[in-house]
Image 1 (tube, rainbow, N blue to C red):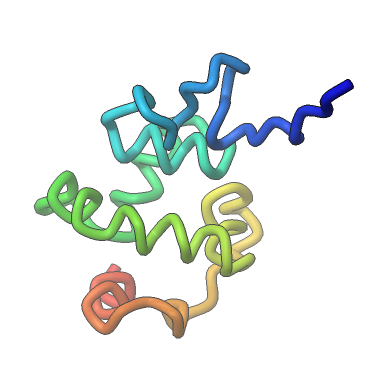
Image 2 (cartoon, rainbow, N blue to C red; image 1 turned 60 degrees about the horizontal axis):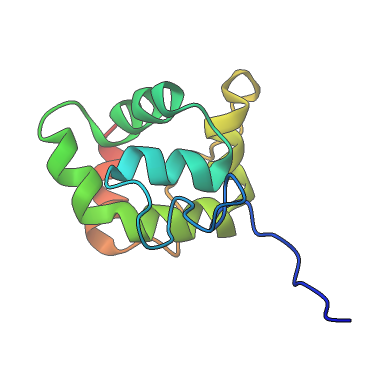
Length: 109
């Protein structure tokens, strides 16, 4: 009898083996970040626009997608800002783990 490892909802969102970050997954960074955080893609895009600014948003999302994924997984206040905005959980200073460039963008918005 062989045992299967637990299913990872980020990598295998529907049980098919083709989740957001698996081969054949979504090509859209907003959808990947939404899947990673179990958030609606429209909510994710609105949040990204609020945090990164509307000008050049698609380029910024593409540039910082990996870093944002890491920060959303490692910084509870940043994730809470996305998932529970009414709490005002996002601290005034951007996460220290963010790169200098991303910290400057987050601080400006």
